[in-house]
Image (cartoon, rainbow, N blue to C red; front, side, top):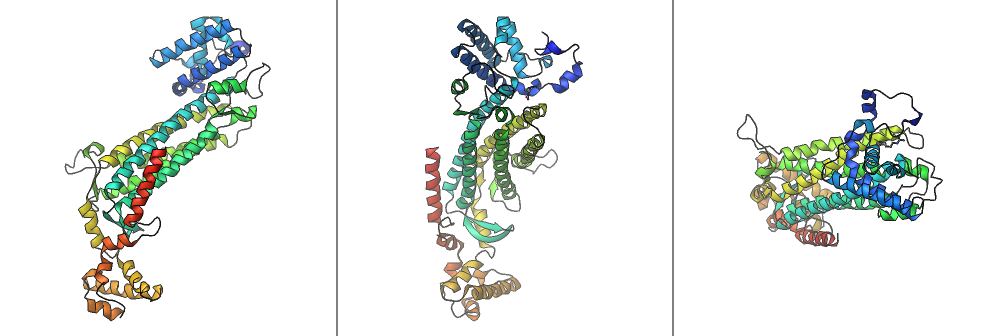
Length: 459
Ligand code: ARG
């Protein structure tokens, strides 16, 4: 079959030029969305009387056949037909004859492709939301098992104050909760129908855009036909939300990589989520976490790529916009893969409680306790900080920790110290006492876990 737009042309492009312009190698991903959009469009053409019912029935039958074939992987696309829209239209004509050519009445590929991508991202966003929720569940279950497990909390990657391991994990739960909110919120803008905007200006046919939007489950229609065919904000938003999500997963990955190192030994990854070395027999590498950290780069790249494609485009459609797809598909695949892997990695990782707790005892992360102790007895905190700083220095010189000092050493530093100071230095007590809202105290952490559970139940 010749090109569907060949009328005003006197010669055809060479094959390699066609190939450069074609998008079928990647937009075939939209095959089912394209058919879905066409079914809604033709139903509208029937409802408005633009096409007689007999034509509508034939076209619907043909589209259904193509849908069945597509699902069975039986369609073979051709570069000659440029993109998914023209491929399907020519297949339809082949399937049911010239009446297939009536499908494109009152429609353009410009509103068609936009419709396809709205349908595609709605579906994918719903999947992403489910997967984020699943990962939150895995994090929450781990956290629940480790409310009273202590781990050093860090700032500047220097030990700062001990925290509950559950508290540390739950920090990611809340990041993921915000990711979920962002993706859900974006659905409002994804769930809008561009169909019926035509090439850019609407159409002379008495179409019913609200009807076709309803057929597709869209909540509303674009107000402006030029905006409808030129808008890619909804894709940018998806890429941006994905970038933030991947940034969170990347930070979590970095911690998993650190924790599973010989230096930390806080966790052990399940064999199913680690790999060996081809030369060093002792190695167990956290490849999956590293890959997720690495793949974050391509997701940011896809966002920057599309922002850059769009920045200078005049209204309305420009072929540049065909470049919106590969980055979007790649991001969907990357985000979905990363979330699945992460869930498995978190649920199966072994927490080495003893190593974590040992670490909280062999450092100075209880120094704040000591300063708080003096401050609660009336010493200005700034002064208390100074006194404790001197005690820390004393320990460093002696090669010991604060809890190893004699009561007489403490008393020499300040008369306010009593023998209850040793209890205050105990990291378990230190964590337990941090009972301020949102703090690491066990009561607070349990409350947060309960709150988290009800959020998951509501989802
Ligand atoms: N393959 C094109 C794209 O993805 C479809 C729209 C083509 N429209 C046009 N007027 N050439 O952007």
